[in-house]
Each structure stands twice: as structure tokens, then as C-alpha cells.
Image (cartoon, rainbow, N blue to C red; front, top):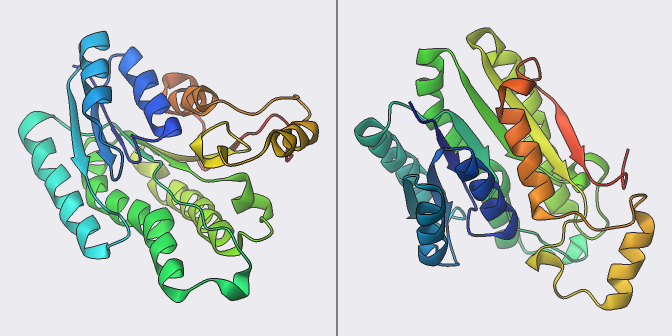
Length: 247
């Protein structure tokens, strides 16, 4: 039976690269997005790989919307699929600026999107994995969750929280044969850095031992590896995908 992957933030560069990688490996897809429409990308995935793709729009900045969204995913799973085999919590937002200038509403928003949404969604969907004693959960954190980023204190806090959540849940779910891992991307060439000047990009490359920015596909390859049988004895891991930027 074809497996199913649930991916949040699927309309973004990294999220879509992950969706494409799993589609290439014959997974059905349940994809969450918020701002960017998924119609064209959904058609591409269906036509290119012959899989089933269902998309759902949800604003994770609102806790009540996250709860409703998770319940709808559960209902859909019961109707169409035996279970969700892989959960990939990828959605996120950045928040750049001096800490003392950050507004409380922005703090609430980024915590909801980056940390509370993964926790709530995982909690809702976990029972299906526990009942069949198998599954994979992959959280997308950040290098700043490991080492902290200047002028990104709140963002760093949410991503560090995701790492702690990963490690704790991995211990709890290991007896149920459910693996929980985390990917920590470095500087990835996405729309998030599109506002950087050529000189800023060049300076970033100089800080990376491998001499280039990461690609969304680098994260997608790591995610698929962690979900595969090749990683069946790996859990609670924070996999750095950063070209040597932070070791």
C-alpha cells in the first residue's frame, strides 16, 4: 500500500522540495499552505508522479485554526487513507529586529506558527502512529535554534524549542517504534534571503566551509533519508544540513 506524508508549509521553497522528493518516492501527500496558492504545484505533483495530493489552507498564527485544521486532517485520513506514515513540521516564519523592539503580538504569532502548531498537530495525529506501532516525525528547526541568531532572539527561541520537543518526544515514542528527528538547516537559498544584496550573499558564502548556500533539495534529501529504512535506528537526532557553517 502506498504510504502518506503530511507536510506543513508546503508552498514554500523547502516545503515544496520536500513534497516533490516524497512524491518521487511514491508517497501520497497531504499538504498545508497559507499564503501562496498551491493549485499549480498540486497539478504538477499529480501529473508528474501519479500520486494523490490533497491541499489545505490554514493560518497557523491562530491557535483555534490549528485545532480545527488538525481535526479535519484526522477526518480525511479516516476516509481516504489507512494512516499518515510521516509527519513533517516544516511551516515557519522569521522575525528579524532588535529584541526590545519586538511587539508582543509578533511574539505570539511566531510562537504559534513555529512551535505551537507542530506540537498541536503532532499530538492530534500521533494516535494513529501509536496504534500501528510505526511512523516518522520530522521537525524542521534552524541553525539559530542551536546557536542563536543576533536580532533573531524570538525566532531562535522557537526553533530551540522545536529541538527540545524533538528530543523529548523521541524518548517517549521509541517504545512504540515511532522515530522523531529534527533537521537544522543553515543558510538555504530561498525567498527568505531574496532581499540580501550580492555582497551580503558573498559574505555568507565566505562563512560556509563548503563555499555555497544550501539548496531546498538538500533539506528534502535529508528529510527523506530520516523517513526511510536507512535511518531505522536513528531517533532524537538533530541533523545539521549547513555545509559546515556550524558544527
